[in-house]
Image 1 (tube, helix red, strand yellow):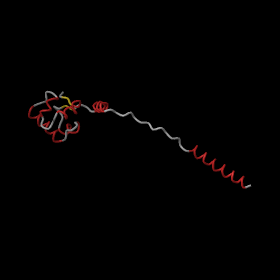
Image 2 (tube, helix red, strand yellow; image 1 turned 135 degrees about the vertical axis):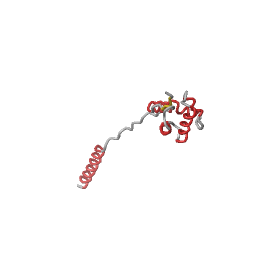
Image 3 (cartoon, one colour; image 1 turned 90 degrees about the vertical axis):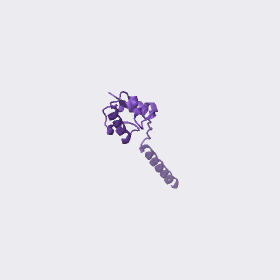
Image 4 (cartoon, helix red, strand yellow; image 1 turned 90 degrees about the horizontal axis):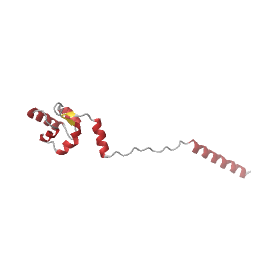
Length: 114
């Protein structure tokens, strides 16, 4: 009799564990996105950003749209344009105090003069 009760308890325990395991949600595989290379990120970023016209943009537009250009440098660009006339090329931006080759290259794809 004791053996029958013990067998019944073990059976009930195993049946309960079996039901709990089958009722648990199935684990899902984690999907990872492929890593973006720096080049891919730059191309994607350049495609999203519209070009900024150096000859018509105000200081606020320049500081918001260009990398490494804050309000002070943006005002310097506008002041240079007012003093020297419209930019003849994007490379002329190097003439503005505080704008170096690295800043120009970061923003070359974002700039236009038309």
